[in-house]
Length: 493
Image (cartoon, rainbow, N blue to C red; front, side, top):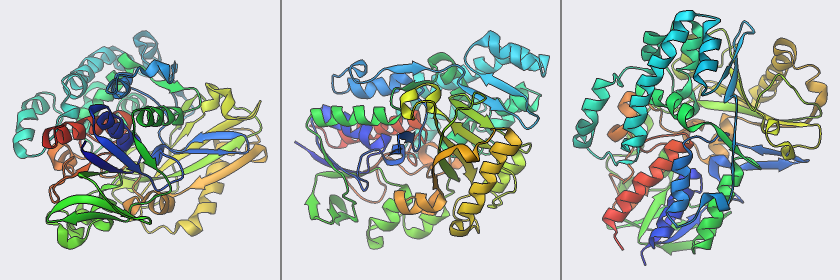
């Protein structure tokens, strides 16, 4: 049997581990934390349960494929719970739209603000469906991109759909009202990208959500992590938690093992599910590298970071849905401050995940479990989070209580824990605290992203948000499929 070490157990590493174990490889996962999960870790305290990262399920067929790769049926491990609306989106003027996949409901809401936008909805979804076909149906998202030849094969589809233009640029062709333009262009923010700088292929997400729905699972997203871990172990996989990998062992230009606190262990091949920059800057000796030396790694554009407040409250808030967005008046200006100007602005937009709207067991009776996510610049910004953490938290809580209107929020807080960009660096080994890794710009997509097979080290592979096709749960699961294809080609059993 071919032996494989996988460093990290986020959705990408865990999905690849399941796939390879199902194919007959002998896989060992190494995880720094006490439990598997990576960015999809779970926080449980004082009766409250929080998903610390990913919070929604889309493209269920991609998840189900991971279970099927071992002959398992996902239904035996967990059930999907449909959400409606997918999100409630509050705008600065207190108007809101309940975003879902119902065409009539969406057109009715859009028409309140701009009748022409309502008429454009079907046309936009037709456009989005073409992008969906390219990425999902035609499986471009799981095809390895290793050279310009691979890129040019896909170029005609990219050109014909104007996918090289930014998401916001293309959305402007369809919609006029600022609400519509946000609703159909914001999705790159879910994968760490700017809507004003991410290629329009990501506009396939609205159609993906429309035809596939948005889902949750009882117990939260971590129940999916636990299900994948069960399948992996059931089929003979080995998990070593609280075991951080300090070095990838390279001999004669080949990855041959890993070094941990317990010493060195040898493998036929190694896969890194850690942050791309951490892999090449910290886990590999620089004299072993050609392309991805530190200077080149540093030149890449990295995603934004975020501020997260995990809040348990003694009362519930009916104005919040399972997924709620609360927006600043500024859109492009705020995004520019985060991605380009690298400043912590006076205003902010936020996303709230309130799983108790769907699963009351995630908080004590009558209470609410929620997290507040606010996009921030990464650690290239001149922000001292040791100083800013408490001050920013007060700003966030005051805004939610006094500006947004969550009555008596602060005196009803039963639990509060905060995670900042500094924690993404220290806890998750994320370079610059960039929560989603390499930013999804046009020239950092497909073969321009770090490859799923290392360009520098033989028998070393990458999986996760910084590889092709990119971040987000569906994207990361597709990186696992892409990397699996390469491993099976290079190391057949």
